[in-house]
Image (cartoon, rainbow, N blue to C red):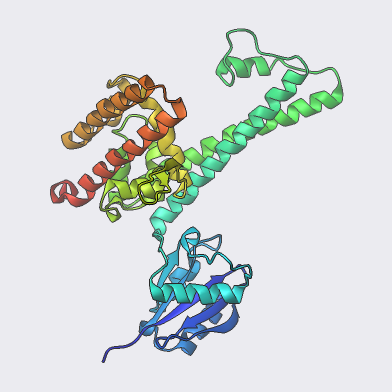
Length: 374
């Protein structure tokens, strides 16, 4: 006997969950609000009927994927949807939890929602770690700026030829002192924050090394292979794998480019075709690391000592993809520079094509039986 599914929309908050159901006959009604805890979710599922007949959804947000795993363990088919891709009525000016849950249920039933990839335990743990390092790098930049601007306000500048934040620069910082106790206390506080940020990043990078070493073999294999690409060292490769997940979930490289938000926006109608800046609607963490890696392709193709060391245990097809990337992306950089494009636009275009080579490496590793058996 064929069962007719019921579509459940959940508007999830830290303490509560607003619930609505879209019935097969077209009726959409609210079931009120329940506490956001495991017991309340279990009682809700029992109330709604057999779990195999339920289809639940909620928006991706700060509450993470805890509810997804709870519903999945209870036998309910659940998806997490992209909040920026939920249809919005132009004249709708009333927003409540009840209306949001009803809209989710209605749009889910009509197939208008876009699900996001839910990471497994290994991917989510690595992603949390690389994002913590990214936050540490931002804090380090702010701490360094505070100290530098404080010294500049009082006419304290490093000697000529001393590059900021090198060993010589830190040696010079150790000689800086102020006669006034308040200013000296300020300098010591800023210096302590800089040292703390440096130690924090070093600690997180050691943790990332340990997490990669303890990751599942398929994940480690992709991280190692991506480092064959110029500009993609271990931290960047780990970020790509943690943010994207299995690269085989994208059938074409353009889908990965769109997921990253580096494709141009478009507003075309009839004979008029208008394209603008990149959409930036994808994964911002992935877009940042890929754009940073793209700067390496302004230099002519070569295999330096560091890159050769990263490639020493990789197969020849992987090395061939990386070498082709160097030639193609460098030529792309030179061609766009010759047309007078600004560097940021050039790097964005090169980063978009770099995603194609990342996709190629991931698909080669994850779809070739001979490679998986090696």
